[in-house]
Amino acid sequence: MKRRRFTQLSALSSIGLLVPLHGCKNKTNTSDASVVGASSFLNLASELLSEWCDAMLATQINAPENPELHGALFCNAMNRIHGRCMDAVYPFMYMADSTRKQKYLNAAINVMQWSENVSKPDGSWTVVQNPKSWAGITVFGAIALAEALHHHQHILPEEIRLRWTERLKKAAEFVHKNFTIDYSHTNYPMTAVYGLHLWGKMFQNKKYLAHARQLADELLGRLTQPNYFIFGENKPPDEPSEKGLYPVDLGYNVEETLNGLVQYAIAVADEELLTLLEKSMESHLEFMLPDGAWDNSWGTRQNKWSYWGSRTTDGCQPAFSLMADRNRAFGTAAYLSTELLQRCTIDGLLAGGLHYGNHGVLPCLHHTFAHAKSLAFVLDNKKVLPEITKKNPIPRSKPYGMKHFTDLEVWLVSTGPWRATVSTNDVIFKKPLSQTATGGALAVLWHEKVGPLFTASMAEYLLVEPNNQQIQPNGEDIALTPRIETRKNGEWFTNLYDLQAKVTTSKRKDVVILDVKTQLTNKHQKVLDEGSFDFQYKFGHEKLVITVFAKGKSQGTNTCDLILPLISPNHEKIEQLSNNQIVVQKENAKVMVTDNAPISIMKTAKNRKYNMVPGMEAIPLKIALPKESKNVVCTISVS
Image 1 (tube, helix red, strand yellow):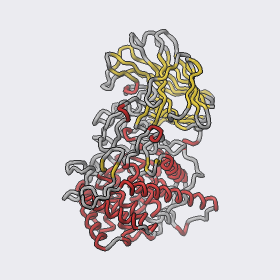
Image 2: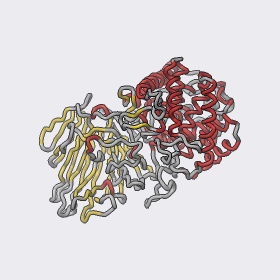
Image 3: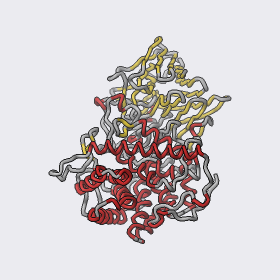
Image 4: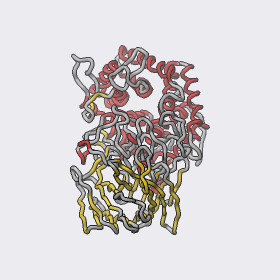
């Protein structure tokens, strides 16, 4: 990969926000096709931001007689006001400046005025209207306000500009006084790296600039080896698991942490840091699916996985757009992600998965006002962005066989039309006991003709963050992760809780094989007597074969089942051709599931089971494992 140093300041360098990513004097001529591609990306971002902002305007409370409500954005999905809705000040200000429409300026002024309801004397803002609630989110609001002022303060009345500037100074000081490398999860101090530099330049504050540098220098202590994944999304942030793994969350990393680090590294022209971040981004990019989804099936904070990323993060567009001159596939990722965000937008608001609309679930407003900031940033900096096209493929769009990430204990399969993820990651988000895909589970199965076929949910849907998670519709809870399970004395035992599972791999010509040894446990790691299983995933070009191997009396007196929740929106036709064969008719292909044992469909509401993680509907197929010594062989094919 050709690298170049940054030698020339851009127009934004007056406050040190960005330096020319792509040094204009050294920039080569681009083809017409490239220019069209770049324009298409920016047009997409502009159209989507406009749609989101108009939908957010429709949620803004107009009650000037009631200052506790007036100007807030109301989330109909959660029937509450999110304290962070003030983040929308930045996208509203961008729209006001670019369209010259008063409605957006009014919206920005009103939402900032409302933010006094979550404002504390120490300069912080809180996550809800409770002064005892979490105030770390101040770093995100302060960056949004700073970007709004930097790019668009010229459209504000002078009195409001001064008021906002003074309020920003208080928020910046709060972050400076409180943020260390161990301040909560890693995304907070790493985002503060950019924030402190930004505020330091705006206010000519050397203490902030030094603090930013200090935090940036501590990144090296938060990178896994050998793949440079950023870790720290847990408490404590640097405690390894029994397997020696650190808490990594892909969603937070790609949609939040990497943004702050990249924006800072570019602003200070730190080539060493940029090279390090490039390596880290290349590893993270391995987990983008060909449709632009971020595969966070195994991440520590998977409770917020929303297929395109994470519920309350900002989006991958800033980091991956800004770094696209160093690796063109980064630009492809930014483009594909934005297209997926558009596909998941319902009535102007960003939904947390592909099937919200199918299941009648309202999108949480938090998704939209957070991700709108990233699109505003991209559009505000379009003059210094490299070309953003989809010409350069992301890693997972190519059939490479299999890759094992030893610092995650996750295997990626990319062969023929199949993309798959298998996990034995043993890190648990500890408060509460939030269990992501492990136990050798097939955390993701994706096919080039039909998209996702399996997507892991939490083993048990828990409101780890009650202010930022939607409840399950109809009170139902069924894991979407493929698994073996049984119940004994009312307790659920499954490989989804097995933190000791082992995977071995092999390859025969073009067939990729993963063999799993696992056991059934409850959520407290109690192992079911005689509950061990061996199973295998065999990926060929035409089919995936899942085999559960007979082990004599391994089941004891328990009846165990293989559960395969097949992703399918409720309008797709299901046909049971026989006791052993089911066909699902998708838009452009048929998915056939065949087994040598009878297949049944578990009872469902609305013809499907639904899980908020990652916002999918599924047909829950159940295959009873026979008591006798007989392998169960399940074949999945797409035609």
